Image 1: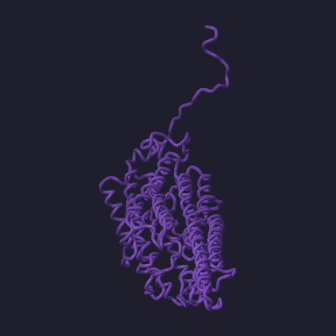
Image 2 (image 1 turned 120 degrees about the vertical axis):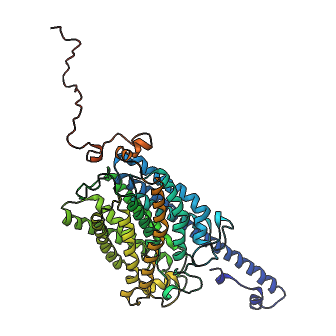
Image 3 (image 1 turned 45 degrees about the vertical axis):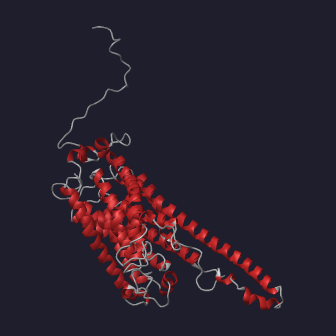
Length: 509
């Protein structure tokens, strides 16, 4: 934009007649053009930064959605505990990401493995990054930590949350985001030297792998090492449903997450004021932002409806919690390819994501794996499917527009060959390996130090009472068998006020 309004007095003076005053007039006119050009440049920076800040606010609002979803999915006796852990994820993650995480992720120039600059936001902002970019990336980092907290809910010590959340947001997650999102990352599709993995780089536009798989795999290891909650499986090994205490909170949290996803996916463009091709056209990055919002919506809606009817056929009733989880599974899956696929492909993504989630839940029951929020199945399983989906359905013209270049490898089913799909498979494998070798030993070490799981007595009474000074509200889980002794139980019968008779005023016999 600035270059189209630039001029040089030496070029303009001959056009003004070449008189003595023409040079002065040309200099004056060029100075005005330069001022206008600078105003346009400033406006472009302001528009793009405002767009990114608003997107960051939407992504941060997803923390409220996580909190409501988690609270509704656990039993009432652990409500305060799970709400506090959600606050802790944001607070501890904020400091650790500021001190270390952002530098490890985007500290350029660096090598392909880890960033080396901007610790504590030193030498920041700069010509390529502003504070809005840090805030946006921090919101993503704490989202990954929030996913993990759902997997280990209702039985984890408070200190363990503090340790894992800081480690995940300050080191584990940033390394993965450097690999796939930084211009220096070895597998990044935006690598500055154009030396792409398989000539393509892995396309994970908004984080099906970087955010969802990282959080899901970390939660998987935490839940595996801790073991299931008391009462989750009976003595015969059969699954026992420990229902969350509030479907209303689950629905509220799901809608808040849905709303926040419009910052999560469309916001990942980082800018909006960019034309594709000749300027003055109705089609540009603003159109791609809108398309991304549409594909996100369609994938989630399709997954929700698929889950609704599938669960009806499998278990015989309509379950709102299952539908909400299916909805979120569709969102997690489309997050990778939301910007580079057609709307009809998003419907395919959502349909398959619903069955991936159902299948992962069946496998979890078979393996006696307990995840109160189905976080590992939803974010890990559906996130992996989303990466594969992108390798199959990414459209060539959209890949070129969003990532730059001409004729880049794209989806296998769209005629783009198998190089992008190969890069996506590599991403799945390295994320599983990296998170396993970092978070697995961390949780195992906490377990050996007796810092991971609470005592069975505290678990049966509920952490709100034993760790936080009382219940969140006056409520009892009628179907919580862990609170009831074996066999029959006698219950105190309180007197009623049905009879106005007063023994004190009755005549003596």
